[in-house]
Image 1 (spheres, one colour):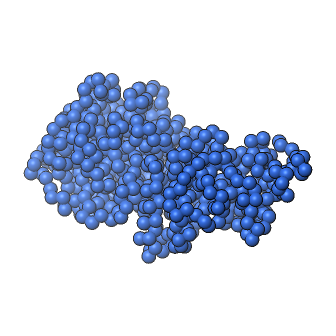
Image 2 (spheres, rainbow, N blue to C red):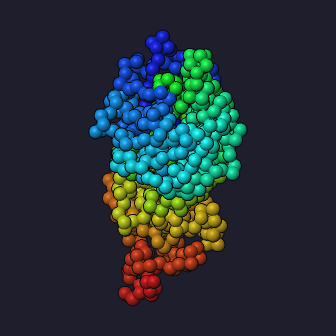
Image 3 (tube, helix red, strand yellow):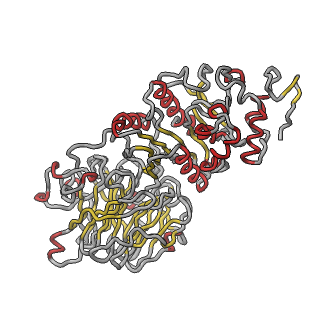
Length: 619
């Protein structure tokens, strides 16, 4: 994920200014990164000065959409500099005490702040390390930072000078902890809890064991520096060296290889002084590439900017919503009122020649979101990075169940969440009907109507059809995790459906991915499309935006859905559903099951009633 968050300072002489063309995207880092210059001139940063041993961290503290700065120092305070400029042209002013949410934050000597969402409520909480190696946790409560003793991170102690950063380093969608101490190594703690209630334990398998710092007091930061969907490492140390290490493994199994090293304060290092380079990362100048801010012992904060000479991102307008360098699991802008709804995205690319077409397809699809959602990707076939998303894993061969597995795993841990499932419909077969169906389904799954679905619904899509088996044709939807968590493990579902046979007509084989979300009798579907002309299949679909009215589904009588030339009477007999529920889940429907009223029509030959008398009792 290219991190769009964070602000910067620079305290550099005018002579250190370098021409823009000397910088390049970090994705092409060889020989062209590590230069530094002022960002917009010294006047931009004139409103902020830090005390000795400056330790920066950045986030949108005030929720106004630009990037603010805090700085720890030797005295143990955390100073807040509000960005009164913009995301591309920052200007910082020290906040008045009345407007400073950090005025009561004190961490003893050498405070080292870091931002991360450690309670899963979609805002940036604060962790502050200190010289003693301890960490204090301050929960963000409506923009105020309240110390919470006994929090999991407060139970972690390192040997002198704790400097923390957070990121999902094992692919389980919660934040793990990485920190430096008095050694020349980094300490890695796995989150054995979850996104809302973390618990940190020393990692048995430590990908940082081979990371060797040039001196003590490592100050790490995590970001996707090369745009390949996994977290890379930037780390400063006592000698002032700043290292970039590229993750050559994966998002779930990282392996770090040295790529670049530069000196944060060459003059101090040449004089034999301790530099104590402390780093944070983010897009400082709005060009969608990762930059670095380093605080040093003198109190200066230095901006190291990556610059693109040829933008390799053809759809960079699809922005990330991460608020800080550590918030790999971020929900949205602090105070911005956006609900956290992650998208689990299944990407298939047939060949390298298809990449430009699929890039445009994905860019268009994700641009339909009414708000910015974090996007977690399973990639199949030919690798194709998607900017501002998190790549969970890439496989040469797989199917949709791989992505549904990650969505299901997330819901097992986060049952109060909602989730969205999308895929790159049309990336394999470039047909107009696939384009129309993809746009139709995406508009529904990403709509405000689905995001705000009532408690009477737990699955929402543009169209739910009960015939020939319960499904959303094309399989894109929003669902509540408290329902998804009831479903069978997707890895087992296809095999469990095989005894029913029938393929597309009964939701088996490769069509089981479409059927899975509605396979439990606790499903409470709603859909949006009011025109009964389209019920399932491909035709006739609206050619653009359509009027949305959320109603319980199925919204039409049974006969509206029956296509006698396709699948015959499959799905019209309720006993099929009841038998399936019993086989898959060993449960019978409650009175709230959608099928009682749908099939209970004396005019329908396959209904539950015969001459007005119920033949199958409600459970």
